[in-house]
Length: 129
Length: 394
Image (cartoon, rainbow over all chains, first blue to last red; front, side, top):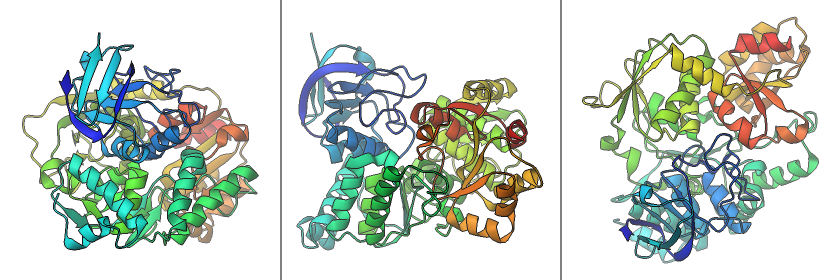
């Protein structure tokens, strides 16, 4: 069990989609489909829908908050987000969208495809064996 | 976080639903990032304006706020829209898109936001002073105001900037505090930077390397504000750089602590590699300049090159309405239009639907545009300096 910092509350369980590289939601993820569209990104072509999205930090445009909010409204959002360091753009997006999010987590411990229990109420992350 | 009596009352709903919701968002952010209190801001820059960027959910979010009587308290400017707000029909922007874009502008206008639509507010009438606290979104303008002007802003998301505008305040954390403005990596430049595009390529490379760190550059001998705007924009797009310092050039460079930093070096090899990575296309169908929005100096340089010539492919120069007005007075617009180009105001290649307008390969001299166009606009990119780009379409 890993303990971090609550960015946005809620409790979810799901499959981890892990990126070692930062994610820029604006220009990086299609708001209507949830598919990663940034050329050359390690997650290019993958869908974030219903995943526990794990990445070190956000990057790029400040419009990213609206993309996170829009993904949720379109039913294409990740179930939860786990970061090493959540910056304001992602924080604003997950708070508005009500997506559980925790940061200050050693994300190297989480492998792509792991089943993860994210309890953002207690700021904990557990990998289900 | 300490809240004043007035702020407590807002949270209890005394000023209505909108200020309550907006303050709740800012208090949540303040609590996460360890803010001690709310501080007044001098101005706001709101991102998330193009219909292409925010789509229906964002539009409905804004219309809901406007419908509930939201009003801004401080000078608030807007990021580029998805089209030229006056000449969209001439430039063949799709009608349905235009209808939605105008809905968004109406919502902003009713909140008292200045309908400026530019990513360079500092060139268009929203200029903060050194050490002024502001709440800006638009990653390139954040970088410019923090680094080149020495004003203080966090990387606000579109909605958190809007919240700051409605309350006239922002939580006091991050880049508002001097201790967080210290460099965290040193970047030694060991190559000449000649063209504006060199600064774009450099920014693209460094942003990828340093991610969200604060670079302290040495070895940049000279750079004008256009080149600094290009450098900062590219670093904010390929990474999350919100503040950089350049020895001898930016106002806080002499004041910050720069001992014992990790050092990375950029030579001609890395710069050439950045050019190679940014170049994904061969022949441009269109050349789009002005990312971030062109200054008058940049527009005049384009006019100079196109004087008396005929273009084989369209050239757009994206800029603010204010710069366009000045360009018209100076006759630059006339020269560019006679050659077959356009000065496009209020929008840019990234946030406009160019992929739906039949373009497949775009020529740019901007590291930021080169970063976004392949994914977001499905474009191949020809990245080169201004002279080469224009030579290719004359």
